[in-house]
Amino acid sequence: MVWLVFLAGFVVGFSLACIPFSSQIQLDQVYFAPRNSNFGEDIDVEIRVSISSVLQNGHQWVLSFEKIDKQEKLVIGNFATVAAGVGAYRAAIRTALPHDFQSRFVAENRVVGFITLEGVYSGQVFLKRSWKVKKIIQQGANRSLDTVKKIIDTRKSSIERNSIQWSAESEGGQINPFLT
Image (cartoon, rainbow, N blue to C red; front, side):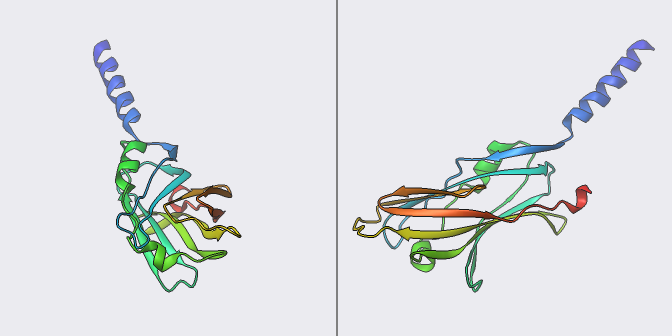
């Protein structure tokens, strides 16, 4: 009788341990590197973002870029949540930006658009976070666009490489209607 109680307790405990509870997911060092772009340069996009979410199979995440005039939108990554964790996220969204991203969306000294991350569950958006993206070419710079690196962060951030500076400003927050 005692061993039955022990076995039942073990099964219940193990089952609970397998339930994906709410947790912090760190997505960092996720790179998007286009090939054969019009300018011939490689663009690494490193997205560092912390997402507070419930890990459940069936959640869908969409990473997109939208022009400032909202006339055009590109889906950069579209991937499903899996309980396997961060490694699976990184593997799922490591992909290539459109080869003509630079020629279509880059503009100097102004915001060119927004990168947006959306979490979807049962057709409802439960998390949405956006970043302004702009490119600034320094005065007197006359270097080639061999390598451009953008860092998108939850905080305002920028990096300079080859006399080109990309900056991003976080906009937006999160809503979790199915958690309330």
